Structure formats: structure tokens, C-alpha cells
Image (cartoon, rainbow, N blue to C red):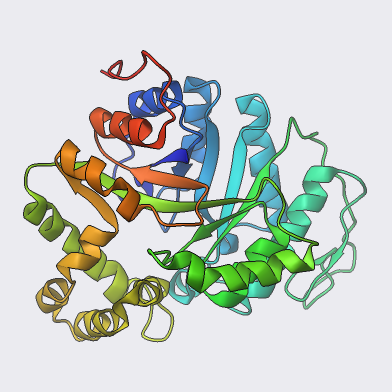
Length: 353
């Protein structure tokens, strides 16, 4: 089981990079470190700082928002970051975000998320490959641009910068269409709402996508997410996690488009997800927090003493994943996950500050 270290920098008002934790993860054999973006810190800039502080660990976005950049700009950023990092270290995890951010923050139409993703990935691959000046006639994006207000002077261009190695392109998705799209065109999938029965739910959608490309690539990755917290107070940890869960399920999106609500429903909590959103949107936020089931939090996290965490590892890690993006705030949590996943080289554990 490969491990990634997840950093939730996008939620913070002040940017504080945990460089020493990332260095420890690298020494312990972690595959990657992951950043994200919403409408605060961007996903790529922190990775440039981490590239300078590390040598091997892969630098990944989980996710970079498709609406935030033109596809060529995403490719340019990834190629520049990979050049700084020494080559073959960058993974661009892409996601569509939601209409509130796409239209409210970026000032772009929601349109067709699936076609936006398809065109974004296709153009990125053309830019990185440098096989020819980039032309693309997609449903969502056309290069050169020839739509409204165009002067008609657009010219197909080839990237000046050459790639320094292989850049992975992954897609974050939870619904059947975009999950199948990830299997069809991407190098990996970051699932939303992948619980214990995730493979049974999502496997057929993945199979449809893989069939279109002639089968599953041998190196196709599926990384789920896992929060690990060492504590003697499991009930307190569950209670502390509920407000953020309620905010995402209830308010991170509109009544019609909320992917966090949908992810909770896919994990078997459809009724609770609907109730949380109903209460949150009605302004009854304390009740929304109280409506988050304890078992939903506990099933999707490793909470408790080290003994409890060890005993629950096989229960919490579902079938079908090739890796886990672990979120933990302590050096010991990073070490424990490495030990459980079998990534830790002998004699390394315990070297964190």
C-alpha cells in the first residue's frame, strides 16, 4: 500500500508549511505529498517550496481546480514545478470543484464538467508531449480560440520548456460519468465517497472507462483518503470532527450541487446527508452538526490509541485502493501509518523531531 501525506493548507488563513513532517514522510518511504485549493492558498506554489526541501517524494495536487487555469497554464505550471523538482516527481490531480466556486470565484460558467475535464487533460498531454504545435477542437475548449470576441489571430504554439520527466495526470471524481472518464483518460483516480463497499459501487464505472482504452493500465493508481489521529479520547475526536463534516456536507455547495453530500450518501448515509444539508441551509447549524452520525466519522478515520488504530487498519482500508492519502498532524502519526502500510525502511522510524 502506497502512502501520501495530505496537507490541508487550503483551509488555513495563514500559510505554514510543515516541512519537517514532509521530510519525515519522505524518509519513511511515502510515495507523495498532496496539496489542494479552494479559494485561498493555491495548490502548486507550496509544492515548489517542498520540492526544494526534498529529493524523492512526489509532489501532487489533490486537487487543482480545472476552472482556475486554462489547460495550457496548468501544463506550464506542472512542467515548471517538475523542472524545479528534478523531473518525474509531479502529479496533477484535477477536479471540477462546484458551481459556487467556478462561477462565484473564477467568474466562469459551470457548463459541462465532464467535457471540461476531458479537454483539460487532452490539452495538457499535448502541451507536455511537445509533438506538434497545440491544436484542439473540443466541446468545451478550442485551440486556437475562435469563439465570440476572437480576433482570428490565434496561433498554434509548442511549449518552449521541455518536459524533465513524466508528469502524472489524475482525476478526482465520485459520480459514475467522471469516474469512468478518469479510468478512460487519466493515470489515476482520486475517489470521493469511497467506503468499505467502494469497489462494488465504483468498479463497474471504472471498467467501462478502462475498456475504452483497451484495458486497465498496469500503473493506474487509485488513492483514497484517511485521517489518522492518536488519542485516548475517541468520543472527543469524533465530536471535534463533526463541525467540519457538517459544513462540507451541508454548506460546501448549493442545494442541487454538493459533491460532499453525494460522497456521504455513497458511503451509505444518504438519509443523514440529506438531513445535514437541510438543517445547514436552514441556518440550524448546531443541529446539523449533531445530525452527523458518530459511526460515519469513526468508519472513515483511524482514531484512538495506537493499539486501537492497529486493530482497525484492515477494517478501514477498503478493497481496490493502491494507495492512501493520510492526514495526520503529528510525527508519530506519520510513523504509525508507515509501519501499518509497510513503507517504513528499517531504522528510520522515530527520527522525526
